[in-house]
Image (cartoon, rainbow, N blue to C red; front, side, top):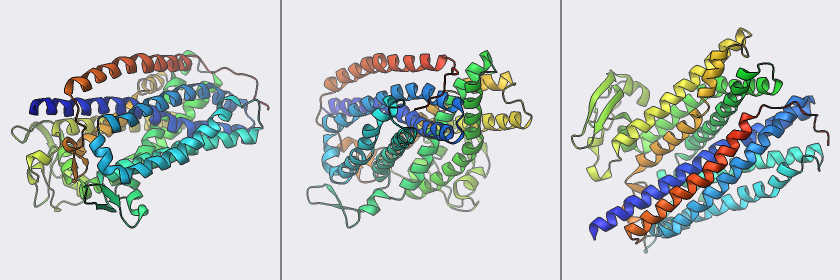
Length: 449
């Protein structure tokens, strides 16, 4: 019976991880793409240049596909709270339920109310009204991210709650304390910047792809130039935001940081090394084959040499996150971020030399970096969520105590069903979006209505 329960928990976690990973990729793109569309339409209204109107129409079709897949994949996740995680929903529902309801009432209704005008009203309403619709959808995606990240951040750094006699988390005196919990501002900034960079590198890859075929295409030149500005300017800001987020995580979730760094031993006097690579082994509580840089770990994590740092040995084994997964997902995320920075600096050099549209190797690199943002946000999400284990509400409610009373075979069959349906449905949607991207932007007549 105990083995049956363990497998049910593992499969329930795998099912949620699979669905949330699929879902997270679409909002990461649609959040940035909605803002990109608002910028394009605003520039068209300001300058009257047809290239912006044509690019708007080009990316609007892709946005519609991505947005639809994000909505559908998100609906599936909400059902799992009731089917697989009913205990968590019962205990944490009084806190997270209203926040998720606010997301529907503010963001989803705003998006749904103006999406039709945005998609189908471009030749039916006035220019300014259509721009308002585009702005409303872009703002709606931001508001949606705001509430969802507030929920997730509260689960990471729970505050402002009271525990009732039946074990439920009840809101305390102030909802502001719950909404703006200690990790929320850092997570919001870091995630939104990641979404904008994801979109920038996807747009840049499409522009570069078409520049390799026709470097005189005005739409390809414009989208590539705009994307590379984002890569050059936003990537360094993201590095600073990530550093601030890391300091916040060290203060509130030190076990997660210890796993990220591969530190099984504490450093009471500071002076911790930075482990670049290695193989964390939880059985022996060591990081094998470690490649280290002395002292740099303390400088990055605490901005000093002598501040004490906790290792995983400061926590009971049943309260430690899976070190190997967190260790490597974080490094992949950072590695991709460094490649983004290099690409942005390379494009800046090309722009200074007046060769932004003339360097084919830069264009090939930009094409290769097209999926980089998606890989980075996925690895960042894995780092955040796996690093929180073994808790759903950090330090208060264990994952093993959050799951519904399910049979392992029932969860396994539904997981297989999800895998088959997801790859078929969303694979088809992704293929169609890529087909749209493969078509070169055309120089249409300006949209005049």
